Image (cartoon, rainbow, N blue to C red; front, top):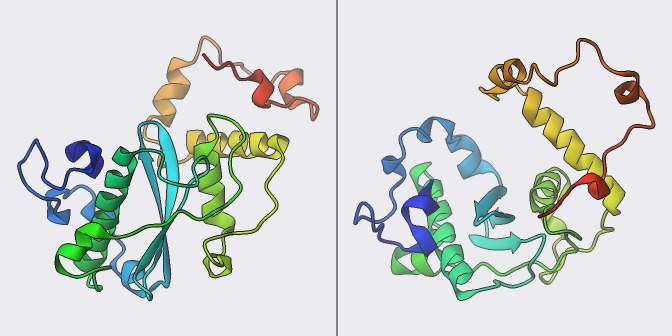
Length: 213
């Protein structure tokens, strides 16, 4: 939402002619966990822009940020560098709104440096969200040493499994307000009972079944 109002990471919104303020997004305020934002040593914050997901790691004690990107090891464009500065500012404002200390003081809050962590990532052009969601489950921030995170990357078959797992969680989640509507409107393809093929343990969807372009 903030990036849609501040395209390309502009600190002054071309829509409102104002700088970012948490209070300008009242629909999101109920979801701000003040206690966690001010007490947890690390904060994971997923970001999506221009169809790509990456993950911010905020060390609230050292007041530092790092970026874990499944596709890039450095900011790929000047635009992304600007967006990263603006995103760091947004997170600093959120922490301050929750009662914590800003990541930087005064004007330096708009120049927060966020280096990229060197980490093995996606092998396809479309798995960024899968990596970000799984990283939030397994990454141990204290094991990031000298800007690197050593780990055994998953084979593509395992990534395919995670994709199906997350898709089913999202589809059938109670938070999915369109779940029931989607089920009703899919009557043309909905089966009265599971087919023997779908029930078979040998039925599996992988990246080879996905058509791209």
